[in-house]
Image (tube, rainbow, N blue to C red; front, side):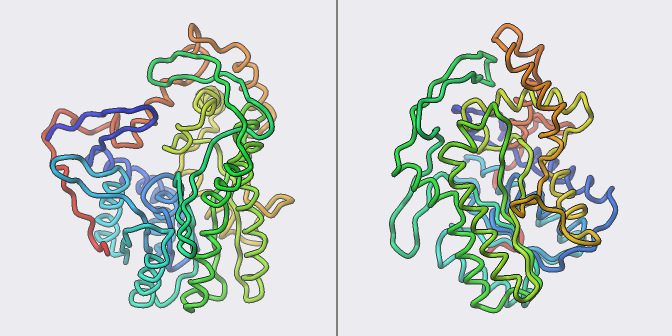
Length: 396
């Protein structure tokens, strides 16, 4: 079939297998062009099919030569419909890992369930014995607690009072004001239950109880802080409460693991185009301004550059791992530079529908959005007839 992008709001309902494969290959080539990392040997990535999780897996495998297990929920093609981008990404990764002589496998299912955790533990026992790194990169709108059966749904709302600011329809370029009502206490708590540290802690507890973690295991989850422009809707909003919980979980976990030489961190990353960030009002417009500034200053990074820097310059470098006062890995340091934020703020105050393409890199943002789904990728013939049914090697 000939596959074209079809959008519904901030979601693209189709994905292109060749485009996804090409982008995975570009990430691999970037990592292979960098110095080798003396890092982990056996790595579990929970949420491995897109974004930071996928890039963390690529760096582990092709930067450090590690064996990897990827856990994700993406689905294959059904009745002529395309598979998800994450499915195609994972198929391309598994194929490339095989060709490179690296051991890798995929465990497919709902990472929140105890059954999936048990299946993953059994796969680790059979294939690796133990893992010395666990990456937690799950981004989901809802979670069912496997112990109570209660389902929680996250919200993206401010806390305390209505929030009004600029936002953009990145498909049309229309800049408008948006007002968002504050979250209730129930909505805040549900967001924490979905996006906080509960499931990460559960994974680590069950992996530890099963004795499939090395004593010096390193585990990392991802967070974001952001600028003053996005604070009310992000870090000071309902999702910010969840990130506070995630970071508190990391500090607690660090104490648990530290007794045997292990480490737990939250990595604060820069703003990047992901399916999750595209859904947050205000954020796409902020990122469009940020991209323009960081590209002009030659500071811009994508997921793969961020993850390579996390491994090479933070986790597996000589001496103590550099962290901030809350024990976080700060990969957003270039985004948060004073000169960068000052210029973004100046642009923000002037943005309108009439000048948005002049003042920001909205075209670049939109292009990266479609690249999440395998489109707008150099070297891919989008008029060619392609097979949507792609198998994932080594899938369980």
